[in-house]
Amino acid sequence: MSTEAATMAGNELSLPEKLDSKAWQIIAVVILAPFMTQMDATIVNVSLSSIREDLHASLSATQWIISGYLLALALILPVNGWLVDRFGTKRLYLFCFSSFTAASFLCGAAHTMQQLVAARIVQGLAGGLLTPLTQLMMARVAGRQMARVVGYASAPVLLAPLLGPPLAGAILKHASWPWLFYVNLPVGILAVALAAALLPHDESLIRKRPFDLPGFLLLSPGLSCTLYGLEQFAHHQSPFFLALGLLLLGSFIWLALRKKEKALIDLELFRIRTFSTAAITQFLSNGILFAGQFLLPLYLISGAGLSPTGAGWVLTSMGIGMLCSYPFMGFLTEKFGCRAVATGGVLLNLVGTLPFLWMAQAGFSMPLALAGLYLRGLGQGATGIPSLAAAYASVPKSKLSLAATAINIVQRLGGPIATTTLAIVLTFSEELHNVHGPHSFFIPFAAILVLQLVVIGAAIRLPVRIQ
Image (tube, rainbow, N blue to C red):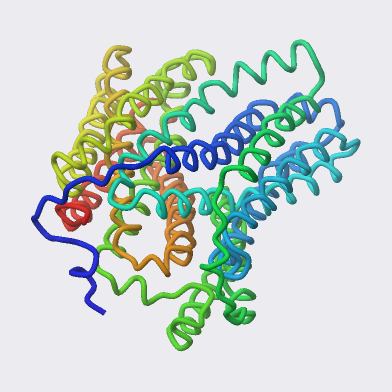
C-alpha cells in the first residue's frame, strides 16, 4: 500500500467538501457523549470530599471512585475496533450510552463506597468506548473537513470543565451528592433517543472477524497495569504493576506483529508515515496538556502562594484560550495547511510556557500568568486538532475503527507517562534546591519546554495539507 499518495497530497490545495445538514445532525448528536462524560468526570472530581464524608469512607477507598473508572476505561478501550466491526457503530453507541446512563443511576443509588465504585467501573466500561466511537462517526461523515468538524465539536465539550464545578456546587448546596449522578439521566435519555432516530444504520460495514483473545488478555491488563503502575511509581510506591504492565504490552506488540491484520490492533497502521507522525504528535501534546494540569496548580498554590480558589480562577484562562481557538481550527487548517497550524500551535504553547520559566526565578506576575495560560490554551487546540484530522485522513475508510482504537490508546498513555515523569523531575528539583518554593519549579518548566521542542520536530513532519 502506498502510505501517502492514497490519502495525502504533499503540497496541493484540496478544495473543501461541503457537509450537508444530515452530517451536521450526526455530529450534533454524537458530541453529546464526550460532553456528558467530561461533565460527569469534572463534577465527580470536585465532589470527592462530600461523597467521602457522607459514606464515611477512607481517603484511599474514595480514590477508587476515580481510579476504578479510569482503569475500566483502559481495560475496554482495546476492543473498540473489534466491537465496531462486529456490531456496528450505531448499535454499539446506543448500548454504551444507555449503559453509561444506567450506571449513573446506580451510582446515585449506591449506599456504600463498594457499591459506588462498582457502578463507576460500569460507567468506565461504557464511557471508555464513547470517545473513540464519537471520533469514528465524525471521521466517516467529515472526510477532509475533519479539522473543522473537530474544532466546532470540541467547543461544547470544553465548556464541561468550566460548567462542572459551579454545577456541582449548586447541586451540593441544594441537594445531596446522589444528584451529582442523577443529573446525567435526562441528558442520557435525550441523547439515546436522538441517536436512535438520527444516526444512520451501518450494517453494511459490519464484518465478522475472529476475536483476538490472546491479544486482549495481554493488551487490556497491560494498559490498566501500566496506568495504575505509573500512578504508584509517581508516589514512590512499588514499581511491580508498572513492570508487569510494560511486560504485557511488550508481549502484545510481539504477538500483534506476528498476527498483523488479525491482531486486536493492526500495528501495520503505524507503517503509514502520516498516521505514525500524527500519533506521536497526539501522544506528546496530550502529555504536555496533562503534565501542565499537574504542574501549574502546584506552582500557583505552592510557588506563587495563591489559594486553591484563586488558582482555579487563574487556570480558567487556559480554558478560555482553548475555547477561542477550537472553532477556527478547521478554517485555519484549510487555509494554511495541517503542518503549519500544528507547528504554530506548538510554538504558541512554548511561548506560553516561557513566562512560568521566568516567574520561577523572578517572582509571580498575575498578568504574565494569565497571558501565558491563554497562549497555552490557544496552542493546545491548534496542535491537537490538525494532527487528529491528519491521522484519520491517512487510513482507508475500512480501517477507521482500528485507527480510532489505536489513536485513543496513544492519547491515553501520553498523559500519565508525562505526568509521572514530571513528578519525578519536580521531586529531583526540590531535593536539588532543598526548598519547596518557586525556584524548585524552574527545572520542571524547563522539562516541559524541552518536550514542546520535541513536539515541534513531530509537527513539522505532518503533511502540508489533508487530501
